[in-house]
Image (cartoon, rainbow, N blue to C red; front, side):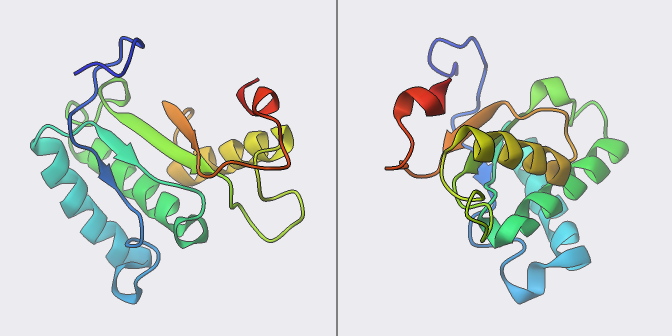
Length: 144
C-alpha cells in the first residue's frame, strides 16, 4: 500500500512502542532490547515495514530500545532490515521538563528530532508526527 501521494510503500499494519518498552519494569534496558527484537522480528517477518515511536514514550527510553534492537537485528540479517525497506516514525511534543522542551516550536521540533535520531541510531526518520496541537505555535510555523 502507498502512503497518500508520497510514493512510499507502507504495510497495512504497523508496530509501535507506546506504553511498553522503556516503561514497564520487565522490559527496560537489556531485557527490553531482547523482547523488542523478538517482537520486531515477528512483525517484520509478517510483512510490517512501519515502526512507530515517540519522544515521550518512556521519556525517550522506548526510542533507545527500538534503535538498539533494530541495530542488532540489522547486524544479524542485513537484507531483512535494510533501512530503505523500513519506515521509522516518531512523534514530537513532550520532550522534557524545560520550558522549550515541549510543544511544536521550531526550536523544539529541531532539537526533538535530533535527539530522536540519536536514540533511534538512524540518520533520518521517514515521518514525524505532531503528537498534539500546540496552541502557542501557529500551524504555519510547525509545517515550515
